[in-house]
Length: 224
Image: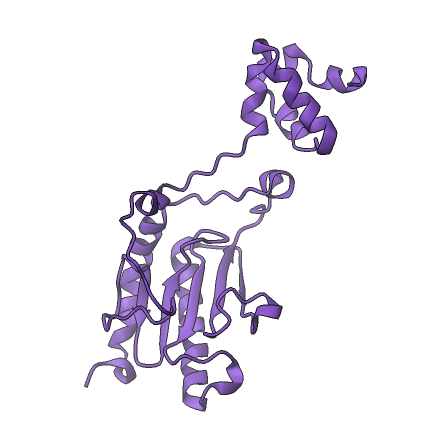
């Protein structure tokens, strides 16, 4: 291992655990990273480097999956098999006759929403004029609720049509609404490919639910 390489990760700097060392370690790739790993494992005094070479993601809501407590949902994610206008277990925030809103269980950012038509269609060209209008209105309303509660600096809104275009669930059309904040692509995302979600997904659900359920009180959406 080159001497200048070792100077960067000296024992003194490692023990200090400075942010500079942490950021620098993210640049290590390939053979040098492996060789550094072998070096610090052979030297107990360099154990502090381990915290920088291991990615730790805090996702407590996945514990239900580990323990087998998550609901077994068959079929399409956007057709959960319940007539309820909301369901916390399914992260269903809102559903009326033509459209529904879910929290993404594996979010790109805090408050990542999925908006879909109730009818099972794969492309916007299959929507009726009424469905298209309802879907776009729901996207607009969902964006307004996110802006009210999460105060994002911006929003990514869009859909992928077809597996070739990146759709994870290609057979049911859906829009993504992703809140964005200035600086949310910090060094962790760029260098370590790690995103930080600052709020438990169930807390986000509780925060947004009442405003989504209030949409059902609009005259056109009330039950007859």
